[in-house]
Amino acid sequence: MRLVLQLVARLLLIVVLCLGAATVWATFDAYRSVDRATAASAQRVAQALQALYWRELLLRSSRAREHLLPVPDWRTLETMKLISPGVCVEFQPAAAFEKPLCGQSEGLGKAPPHWFVAVVPTYLGSHAEVIRPISPRAAAAGTVVATPDAAAAVSLAWEYIHNVIDVALLMAAAIALLASIAIAHALAPARAIVTALQRMARGQYRTKLPRFRSMELAMIGSAVGELGGRLEEATEQRAALTRRLIEIRDDERRALARELHDEFGQNLSAILAFANTIETASTKDKNGTAIAQDARMISQATHHLMASLRDALGRLRNPLPEELGLEASLVNLVDSWRSHSAARPTIQLDLRGDLTDISGPAATTAYRVAQECLTNALRHGAAREISLRIERHAGQHDALLIRVEDDGGGDATRVAQSAGFGLTGIRERVTAAGGSLSILPARHGLSVAATIPLAA
Image (cartoon, rainbow, N blue to C red; front, side, top):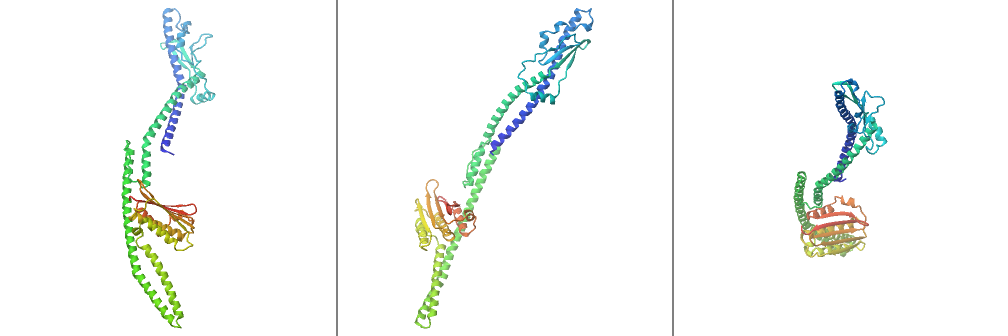
């Protein structure tokens, strides 16, 4: 899962939790606000009746104080305005047949659902009535009793929650949207870092990153740049060491070829000459038929050893590209394999592009890769058809592509993991040239492809 989506999902989870907490708080505050409204209504009505009480006391001083209230004019519209919706107020001691004076509780909003009506009072409890004296200095003046209406209280709480939650939802949506945009913008440079790492994986170590405003991303970008520089230096050092090892190995091969030619070649020639002399002398003697036959067998074995020695010397000496050029040496290589036996598989050579100016290490590497791949396909497989394709990709990225495919079966994974000297050698050569080597399954066999940059 992408990091941006993970952060946005976590942000949405936090928003949902905060919204849930706000809903719980709004429910509790709205439900308990009825208690505050009840107390406020009782206080306001008590203060209004206190003024009436002292007025009646001054105007009707002959009456007993406990009979001054209530007076008819306390149940007026002005008194109704002092009572909050959903609250009923009555005077104590109440007169006969006197009903409480209630605030307007209709039209408070939509009726709450049944589950809300059942859950809220159960967990938050019921409302208590509020008692306020008319006058603290005159206890006989009576008291005001304010009682909240339970149904109206729940309706008020539901309406309040609706208003608060609507605003909270809009704010949560705005916060989630803006924060998501901010997170995406802040993490946008990470794509450039990933792209740089992917280029480094393909061998493009010197990948320049843009300057990041974030200190953390700037540190990561600097670390990636330093890593790329170190990888490039290490790759160049490894390539130089590999080239030096290949040069040393080629020198040893040439020295070994000289030793074989000078020592084994001369000795085999001498053995062949002695065998011919023995055979010639034995033919003149009637009793030397067996000796002549042995001499001929020695001659045949010597010829076979000399042929094997010539083949080994051809492989040990400098490759043909240094003498004939890459194109002619590849044609000669294929022709030599074709001429070994008529039972050999069909070898198709496909040369594309201009190969005339390819020389030096690139030509040597290309020839060695083609030679080793053909050798493996012919000696270790049961191929009936082998395709050797050499193609030059000219342009900005001038490179040489060598591809050898056969229909002899084989396990590409096992061959790719093989530690044989042949494959190890061409891997080293291709790596030293700055190229790449891949071994993949073909339609009926294996496909070995090597890319050699000509600018290296």
